[in-house]
Image (cartoon, rainbow, N blue to C red; front, side, top):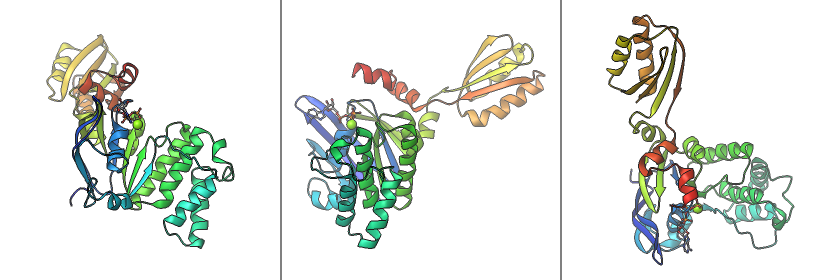
Length: 320
Ligand SMILES: Nc1ncnc2c1ncn2[C@@H]1O[C@H](COP(=O)(O)OP(=O)(O)OP(=O)(O)O)[C@@H](O)[C@H]1O
Ligand SMILES: [Mg+2]
């Protein structure tokens, strides 16, 4: 099946700043594609071009079967958009906004009544449904913004930082709703600078930095691509022999063995889940029983650092 979205050297320049630099990305129908990167990486600019809100300087994107430059109106019909900073300029209430959206999406009166309530409850805005939007907090506005896309159930949902400013309980609730939306048939593009959100929610993650896409793959493949990125700390009942250390070093997935003290080791390796049983066997055969073992996988931050030399937080701070 052809991808539902394909960007083709999509580029945006603001004067002499290249916000998005020849982006080539394919998004499969039904997936959640996370775009992860620090502030200023170009995520919002990229998705706003795909959503036909801003025009590319160069390149284009095909959404469904339509070109964003030539058939923007057709593209818009496929999309629902959650803005990073929702603007609700008119005087109205969460209920009015979501109900109006449901009307535009063609829901019958009966269904509208039921769904509007269901969704406002799901985003925890039912109690506050009659409040004036000017009186809402940033997090509440964001939840109303998300309710719009949930009621619309667009073919493609583009969500920009959906859980910024939202507390952890609210975040989990929204992640679940986005998963449900995907299960109901939507394809989702998620822009975020939160590692955990990208990791938890995305089928594939595209990592962006300074307008460029560095890499795009499943979170697992991205982590596995870091050579020696998995760490295993092993505490032994007695001192480990040189022979045991040599045998550990000879495992092909093991990149480095550090002897922290005579009875504890730290191993840097790949594919931790497959290697650990073999390590245990090997140590048992060498008659050095294991007291405890702790494993840690690389995070997407390690992947980001692998490509840029910086953690996302460092990139965020220095703005580079
Ligand atoms: N309208 C504009 N005019 C000038 N520069 C802009 C404009 N919009 C974005 N930029 C610049 O383009 C770059 C990319 O911005 P963008 O908002 O796409 O980043 P982002 O990855 O979404 O960041 P954040 O995580 O902070 O939302 C930044 O350097 C930003 O200052
Ligand atoms: Mg942004």
